[in-house]
Length: 172
Image (cartoon, rainbow, N blue to C red):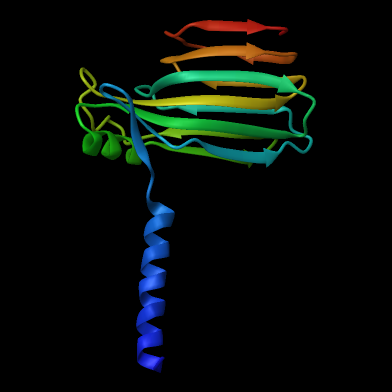
C-alpha cells in the first residue's frame, strides 16, 4: 500500500466513523409515531439530593421517577415524534435535546427544543419518554407541564407548579 492510498483509506475511515456517531436510528413504532434509539445519561449525586427538571412548554411525554438506594442520577430516555413521514419525524427528533448536568447544589435535567416550536403543533409533536432514578430522599422540582408523571419514593419533597398531564406520586 502506498502512502497516498493509505491516506485515502484513513480519510474514508474517518468520514465513515464521524457519520455513524451523529446518525440516529429512527423507526416507526406505530402509524405516524417514530422513535429514536434509547439513550442514557447519568451523573453522581455527590451531596446533592435535589433534581430540577425543566422542559420547554410544548414538549410532551412521560416521566417515571423512582427513588432507589443509589448515589447517582440516572436518566434513560427515548425521543419520539408524531409526524406524517419518517424524514419529518427525524427533523423533529433532531431538534429535541436532553441534558443532565450538575450545578450549584443540585442536578438539572433539561428538555430543550427551539422556541417557538418549529413544527405544526396541531398535527406534529416532539415527545420524550424518560425513566429517572434518583437517590432516596431526593427533592424534585419539576416544570414539564405537558408530561404525564409517575413517581415512587421515598422523596423528601415534590414541587410541580403546573401540570396538564396525569400525576401519580407515592411516598412523599
